[in-house]
Image (cartoon, rainbow, N blue to C red; front, side):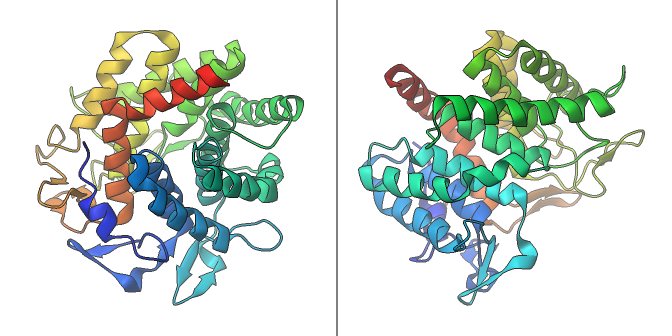
Length: 341
């Protein structure tokens, strides 16, 4: 079972704090919609013990939603700050609420459904490819208040937007949706695999397969996961920066390869998903573990000097989500939902 100690230490009655100083939660770092959405996904997989925490994180999402249905991303000292808002954070909130809306806890499911009704129609105007990807995964794997007809129409619209981005930038040596490879990259092919699994869209499958293979050639060419560093990212035609490597990107590629495996049935993708999981425990460029065995935390990054010893929310959430994926808990719940729907 995953060790939830640091995850719980980072959580108070408001929600999950953003950062820590080493292993000590930092109240002055505030709270984000991003982190509390991902924390909600963790709570949904914690069994009965997760009900209390699902309430906390879902209530945070509810308070962060404005009267017009839009969401604020950053809370500090009881005040929301709109300069941190982003489509990506809203996409993560949509994904989390879509998962919570199918919870066997009626109160959690009902509240998540209400939040979706307030915001989901706005997603048809998103332009961020990652935000669209989060929404698509929520639409394809979760539960939404839409009729089947409207659901299919929205999925087709968002899918076609991603396909349009891909066709605009792709050539024989660059099979990607943008002219740079930055953060959480694999969420985009993962979403297209999810679309194929939902409606059998062959065009989505082709592009998902092609783009994930392109990404994997970059990330696994040393025999282990070597994440694109955030010091400049990977700009088309330039070299790939090695540092700093972020835990959230290991989770992203693990989930995408898992999705590819379950749609294509090719064991190579399952092997790559497991290899991405091993990044957290030392199979990486520095041969250093990012996992803190003492408290279940995850260090914030691989750096040129070793590891960043802070253990913020994004890092531990990424680790726990990947642990749950590899252990089969997320897989089992998705399959149970599909069989009952």
